[in-house]
Length: 226
Image 1 (cartoon, rainbow, N blue to C red):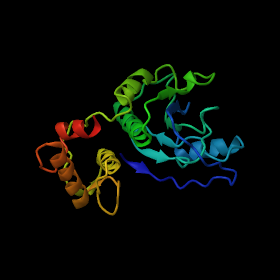
Image 2 (cartoon, rainbow, N blue to C red; image 1 turned 90 degrees about the horizontal axis):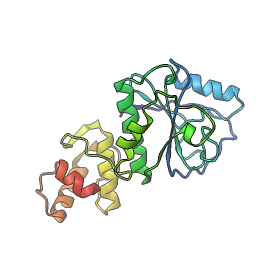
Image 3 (cartoon, rainbow, N blue to C red; image 1 turned 120 degrees about the vertical axis):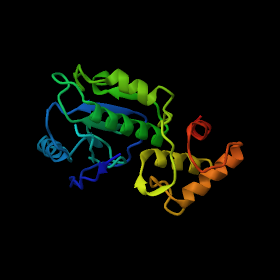
Image 4 (cartoon, helix red, strand yellow; image 1 turned 45 degrees about the vertical axis):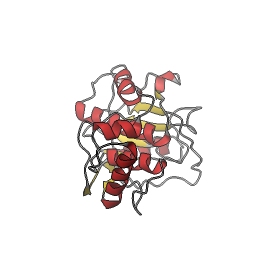
């Protein structure tokens, strides 16, 4: 995933203590907008700043909004117990492209895995609104992201040692290995498949009776996340 830190400045009244139990999906009601646009609009509403935790743009780039630990301002009664993700666009009048969809799906899967939850909602399911739009692929993304109880679905490619490439699936593997007591190295779950992760994968494979090659293929993935 290509996630860019937006470095937004929020008002001092920003609240902390978000405890995510679900992901809530939105659209921006604007065909073209940046995270800075949304931040400005929400400040003009009198809020602390951008109410979403992430914005997924049409080119697949993801921008940070509020810190995940900060209480959102995107869905009443769920602001303190969800991750709010907004998609650039007005999906009452347009259709989401594949690039944006893929990024949104990957981010949603990542949040479900990170917090160990499985619920994905459209804003309109929790509040009186038409957001995220009648053309928003809500059922599709919910089925693909959370169809296996919040567990990540196998990526379809071999995850190998490459310390120069950041990969959200590597991070998910690292987090799962750490939760099972394996040491992935001093950097922890950073998304980079280095020597520490390689040794952790091999140890897991050895303990699980799998072929010890240090590569996360479908068998290792299924054993790890199953």
